[in-house]
Amino acid sequence: MILNRLKVLLLDNVLIKIVSLVFAVLLWFYVNSKGGAEMEIAVPLELRNVPARLVVVGDMIDDVTVRVRGRERILEGIISSPPRAVLDLTDAREGSNVLFLTPSAITVPANVQIMRISPRRIPIRLGPRAAQSDNVH
Image (cartoon, rainbow, N blue to C red; front, side, top):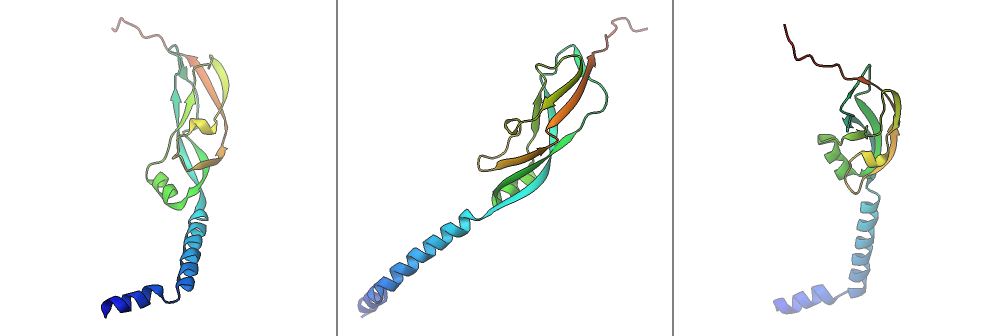
């Protein structure tokens, strides 16, 4: 008796049930693919490979604004632990330098796309490191 009821539940209107299932799966994929969002975040600017004999002189920006696009859930995670923008000063020289920040210098999760970096052009002035005196009086 229970087996007959189960057969009726499963096998009656099979075509409608299959079409409904296909429609539900398609709708789920559509909603998930459209779950993208964009947001702007302030990303701290980190200097790497500053030449040993040089130091940053004068004012410099502390962070850049980055516009990112990705899944809403992933972007929420970025807010709690923001990425860093790394500026490589290996080729920098004494005096005024203008370096360009590229998307590859900013670490973001794999499914997040960097749309815009502002400012992209970073002016940095480097001067000689002050000589330290061994004789302290």
